[in-house]
Structure formats: C-alpha cells, structure tokens
Amino acid sequence: MNGITADELRGMMTEIINAALTPVIARLDQIDLRLRIMSTKHQNSLAGSDDQLVMVPNQQGEVPLEFPTSIRTFLVSGDEMLPNGQHNNWNKQKSRALLVFYGEDPDNESDVDDENSSRSRARRLRLAKKIGVSRTQLNFAQLVL
Image (cartoon, rainbow, N blue to C red):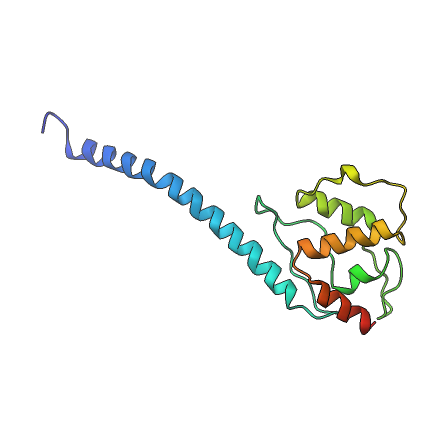
C-alpha cells in the first residue's frame, strides 16, 4: 500500500470523517439550542399567574442571572407590593438589562421614565413576549389580581 501503514490510514480516515462531521455537529448544536429556547418559552406560555417562570436562554445558550419570578411581576410596577403581599423586586433596570441580554437594542430607551410610566410598562410587556408569556396570560392575570 505505497508505504502507508494501517495506523496512518486509519488516522487519515479519522481526520477526513471529523472534518466532514464538524459542520454537521455545529448545525445540530444550533438546532438543539433553538429547541431549548422554544421549549422554555412554551413552558412559560403555559404558566399561571403565580407559577414560577422558566429561565429562557439567549441565542448563545446562556441563561440570565436575574429573571422574573411570575407573570404577576410584569403587571405590578417595580418596587411595589404584589397582591400576595410580597415585595415586587423586579424593576425597570432589571427589565432593561434582560432585554439587552436577549439582544434587544436599548438605545431608543430613555432613563427619564419611572416605574409607573407607559414606557416602563411597554418594556415589561416586550420582555414578557420575549420569554414566551402571551398577552392573554397577562390579561387573565390582571383580571384575577
């Protein structure tokens, strides 16, 4: 065999196969990440008003450090009391940071809005949509507040 040993041939074939499979493996990893994102968003779309929300990874597969606890978090302005008597520690800075984490451009946002402003509410609603919470869930949660 032209001076090629069986081990050398095996090594060459392994390199060829690895080179051919590398793009396939990368594509499968992308698909797996998309499925994880869709699955966690779907879980959040099934959550009730007080159910724990599932952390949704971003496009790089990272999960955020801080995440809203429930759907009611989006309905009550930051630093106010939730209907169950707990303090809502989710505020506009956390919403803005999480939107940035998910790749949304915050440049059109101003710092002059307060927790009760329409901009702050719109930001919370955009964030809810990003993590799979539907308008219907938000409307129902507001009805039962």
